[in-house]
Amino acid sequence: MLRITLATLTGILALAIGATLWGKKPSEQHFRMYFRAYDTTIKETTIEGVTIKNVRQFNVLNEPEDFVTRVGTKVHFTLINESPISENFSVTEYGVDQTLKPKEEKRFSFMARKPGAFTIWCKLHPKNVHLPGTFLVLP
Image 1 (spheres, rainbow, N blue to C red):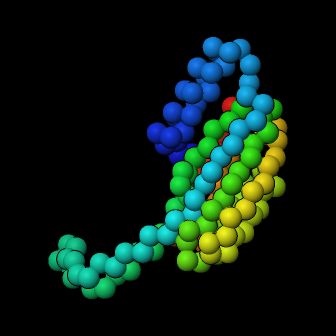
Image 2 (image 1 turned 90 degrees about the vertical axis):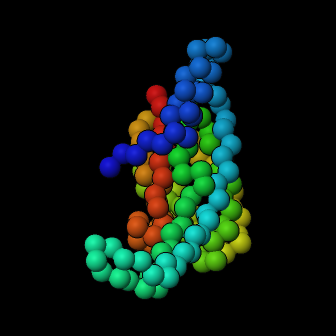
């Protein structure tokens, strides 16, 4: 399922305007992403006549969750894990697989060589706990 958020659309628009104004693709792009955990407990609620108590909701988000670049751009990522547990940043089609311990920061780079919308996901947790994002590479 392809999700395109406001951040993704804004990035696409910025790249399109930049390409039109300057007539060339960016050669390098720097991204910073945080893993942030949100842990919420619902003390009590009633849904369709059924009362539930002490339901725990735990989600990890990539913030921002979407990144946009162009083919031929060298992308530099800085990942910061603010979650209390280890997290992972994977983009299968690009061979990216980075695992970070709590409070760890990592930097890595690669060349965006193929266009498409690629899922950013965590290999350590189910996708309903660590919500995926998108790495969009425009031609």
